[in-house]
Image (cartoon, rainbow, N blue to C red; front, side):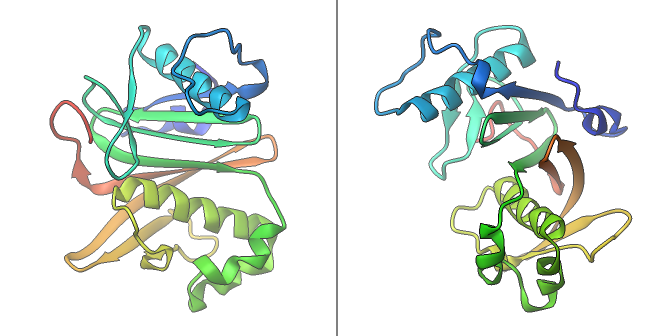
Length: 205
């Protein structure tokens, strides 16, 4: 398993984490490549490699109607993210999780008002904080399993909060997420672990 130190140190989470370097992906591996350009094909192959490493066998990644991935025949929550040449996959058997990986990029400054609430604009003053805000919202969005959820519905923790926690406001109340961070070179990985929901059935779909 890849060495993602912080995730390995989580005391109360049963997680499998794999990181795959897309530059080392062998495109000779057979996957369904219909309609895929080379980049998309590498991402599909990397995802397959990550899952096979996790479970030690050939398993199939499927997508639910809302677009989120799950592993056919495997109970639990599966989440995946990629940026440039890195793909990360995370699996939890009992908690719903979402992950995002992103490199710093100036384009985030231009779109800050598209995803930050007015009282969150303090994140926009520093590119590292802005990167953290973006990855939090993306990771939480994935863990909500709710297509079309507005990023403004996701409330960020205050800057420098010791135990970062995000909240989503819904018509039925609030949903909370524990947040965990990991640096991978220049990239930031953010993992959101949903507090209120445990996985049910054989697949999260």
